Image (cartoon, rainbow, N blue to C red; front, side, top):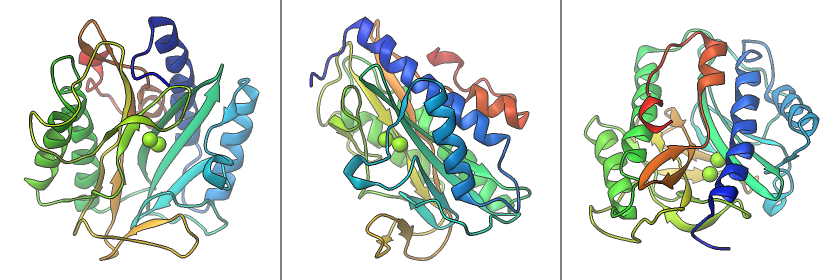
Length: 266
Ligand code: MG
Ligand code: MG
């Protein structure tokens, strides 16, 4: 696997990333109190296969499902199940697809019905920090510039930045180099170059940054049981600047949200 992708490869990764975007948009219409997360998982699997692609997570490192769905205090890697989703919950949904030999992988944290204002603020800030990080993904900058920007945006507002899990390069493999931590020192780490493609994915806790893992071998959750948010995009460096390959446009359309956050990176 090469760190640098051709424009043709970037188009193929974009096609996979956009299918994830559409899948998340489809799910946004279905998320309401009373459903369970296994229902969402089945919808996503059918949707992806109907678009001539394969679920990217299913079977990867033996993960059992199409989606990682992590409610409330779960950070990432939650396994879909039949537990009922309630008004006031949040659901972090991470989705991957494999199409034409290339992966797409991104995530959104959804509110179920009405959520607490402090949780709403956590979601907003985590999403903001994703774009603050993306802005730093350009030629000449380094991995630590993205990490620093995300860490500073969240910690200065009192949130906990999860350090044990990180973003990554993306292409023929779901997880390629470089690792993209959500923390770091400015000017440190691997230098970015034209044609690099990465997933940037802040995982931000309302309380402490400390996490535990359930004995299912997958689910990561906050140690203090407070909520956690996760937003992820796929981005390439084209003409020296960050170019979004994934989009939240489908989610925003389904939820009736107006947003110009992505505009600088289209
Ligand atoms: Mg992901
Ligand atoms: Mg990822």
